Length: 381
Image (cartoon, rainbow, N blue to C red; front, side):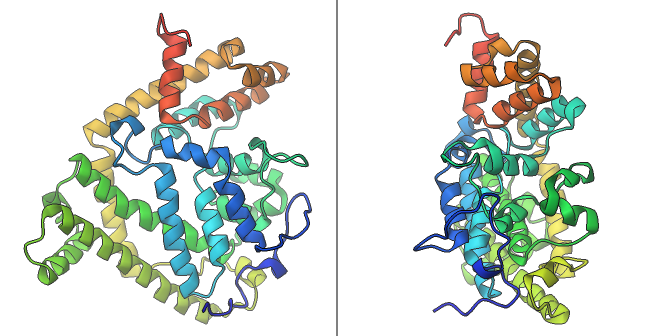
């Protein structure tokens, strides 16, 4: 049995609704409907072939944006249930939060942002919102997925002040300093728990990190030594898995207990009082946050800046920049439907947005293939 939702949790009765009104669902709540629409979207399926750290063709054992999103959803549901918050909303935000990511992870985003800088830049949170509001083409009565305000609020983790004005109610908190729902706050940190922990696992699998290196990080060493004490003689593979598993459990526990204390102290009576808070109510303790910062710094130096990752990032940068330059220079190189939209755009900024949408929607392998079709003699299809 689930405990009843807290009075400050999101639910159908306090939802701000959808951009296009629809009859309520029969056998689901509104946020289950959001989750289901995301899972059935083309953008969600494409996450299977978009990378986290490693490019898709480097091996099928590494995490992709799809598996990462599923892992975030699992962690978010656990936290939401423990805090008597809306699990279905947390899951909907989790499965949608990376829909706007470019191919090739952060390297692709940096390159596309540079290309789009004369036209306002590119930011993957705003692109995720654009995917669910505009780009998905499934329904007869509206563009996008017509998600609830609460799911859209959670997708938009960050937004430049210059673009917040155009988003109406959704952008108001970036101007006034308010907060999103607690479900949005916890899913943001569930994302952090997932990628910190699982990048360790993928880094070890790829041979870019070693256990000896990781033992230099206090938070990893603490959990590794605890596992060794309980299970001496484990293989390195199992030792690494059990250590990562222990770290995830400790982060979730710390987040739940710290957040419970903060919520109790703030005593919000409704979701609107949560939104009016000056600071997030979902947070790690200071010691946990400090330990995680050390871990992030370690991963930045030893994994994300490893020469093999940098080499692939350099290739990704070249692919994205040269595709954008080719398409903006001659939109006739684009496939038919995208070409028509680009040519129909009377302003260069609108044409650039069409091209950015096309590139951002690519999977890693599609971007590599498209690059070959554009730039490699003899490759015509």
